[in-house]
Image 1 (cartoon, rainbow, N blue to C red):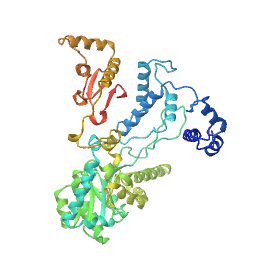
Image 2: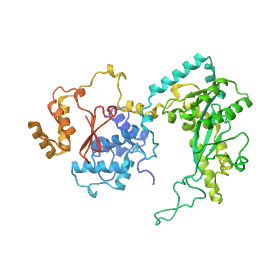
Image 3: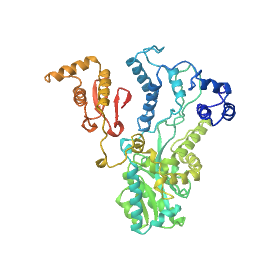
Image 4: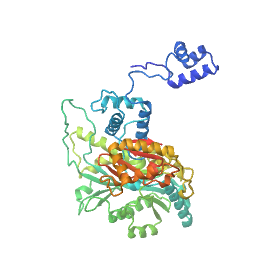
Length: 507
């Protein structure tokens, strides 16, 4: 269906500004911004509201809806994305805390409200998450920049800084696991059938490790495929393309001896045969299989510099993870799907024949862009996407004028603001808990059985509502009314904020 209006709210705002400032006449503003003259006239006379709002009124006020929107966006930015059910829970709590008439069952909105909420707030979208560890979340821009500086100094001291200027001598390698029966994703079928099943053509949980290596100029040396065998069958070896390496380990995963074999018998041989200038630099992650003494000695003797990427930063700094493996795995899924339609199953014995098609499909531009986005070639720390660092996102949300905490001036909070906070806090915990706290304040021998930390917070807030410095507050808290307990939270996330239940109360 076509849009009802041919002009945006921004166009309306500009048109009204031009008319009221007498920059344009009503007729000229109507023509310039493609807004009916009668509409402009009605807005200027006050007969219709300046802000266009179609349909029935929302059950939340603009302020409440904006708070929920900010809560969703901030949590996602900081690595704590919310689900639709979380939002519905919060709206339910808001409506119960501040009663109003709604058609919602038990004050909880349904799917239609959620759909319209997302439509009203186009900044919010649905996406699949990439799970990262706490260690990865702790990676900072400063640490990554220090790594670039250390690498530069190291190569200068070794007298081989020129290696960073030649893309044919810069490499990155990493392992990835490929399933012989990857998930198909969403498929089509009858609406009345609840569960769809797909018959696996082979072992549905079988996964094969592949070690891939790429250079910054887009060249692709032969990979290694690792199998969980004690002894490699001869029939399997005959299926391998020329120069491809076959490895083995008890588990089928990469181990030190297998990686050493790849570097010494595969990668080094390829470098010599292709007359690549030495020394070369190979960027790897910090997996223990890459750090054996035997490997270090071999690389030192043969001018292969193995340099470890910053810890826990491969999602930001490793070309394979940033730009190469995603199209590789997408192509592999297409290869598997094509064989399923043909009735062919993929097993360990014929894996290489099919994987070669996916491996060769990775475009040179993807490889080159991967090194560029990681700042490895051209060598440029500013090319790194630091927005992937959770700490970077926190600084955007809660900026500080100086990163040195010892030089920062504590932010003063007025007594009126703390009085308002105390009032909101008491309203949240309920009159019954407030009365218990009042009695305990008069008689210290009484016990606040279920919430001693909550009581301590209440007392300190109540006794220090005049000239209270934020540093005098107890630990920042997140109060979960499901079990009446308090938990310590990250100060960077909560600075100047208090989290009650499921939504922010910003002072």
